[in-house]
Image (cartoon, rainbow, N blue to C red):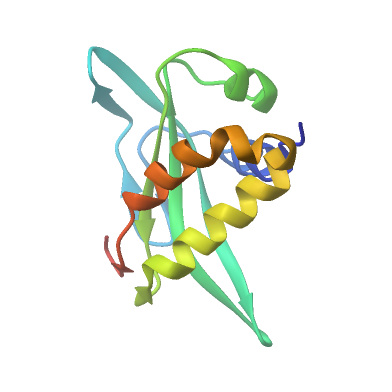
Length: 135
């Protein structure tokens, strides 16, 4: 199973270290609590989408893990709490575009498993709504 897109995102997020971090004017805290777990900010990255001849900054994402790591493969494979926090920069990102982007990523990374993952992907896609700057 190919995990190219996930590995690229995880790689971007595991390679940048700091305490509280700021990227593109977005500051994320050093730590967050998810359920009973305290997670540490591992890194941040910005999603840039090319539109015609311009680059659009869509969102900043931060990856939170139980402990920092630079090994994207281990981060993805670890059966432990983790969280990605997304802060949208672009003025309006429609749900349809978000779902289209997620589906494209899932297809590129898990084409052979799309049938068995369909119900889970549909549920995930159902959580999204139109996003605007600051969401």
